[in-house]
Length: 218
Image 1 (spheres, rainbow, N blue to C red):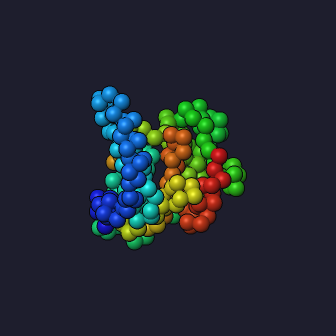
Image 2: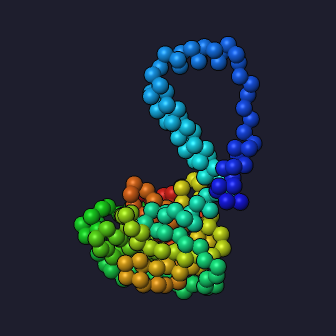
Image 3: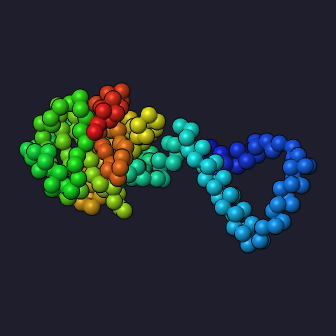
């Protein structure tokens, strides 16, 4: 069911309680004293606020979350569903650079957040607005979310919303495109989330461990 269909279904199923005549008379009397322009403006604001609340409520359901992710960006990552994709992924690429975390922060322009559980990374690379770190079997990329996405993920299968950390789990291998350079590689299962204007891509661990690492990233 599309988002539009769900909105219509909610509208049809809404139950309106009986109107109390005394309350209605009181309200109408008070409203009559308010200038027409102000009443119209307030009615429009109330309608818009109610619609946004309804939309937000629908977006909290897992099926709608997955549908919304198809056409909304996740921070600096654009998720694009495709009919089919790679069935396997190569090992997670390690980060070969050996910058210190302070040096990486100076180059990138922000302080990196790292999973406490993993300790110091074995490799650190950085460019303006971007930091990549790696440990054995784990790669974490973090970059400032801009107007344009940095990555395009062409995925197939399900895209799962992880409510406890407001993240999305890409369960299947997928094409990862670095947008500005059109570089394509196949990425394995990945957790993507955004925090304070920075987008995170955690690749390598299984879903349970990825969520635990993301929860402990600071």
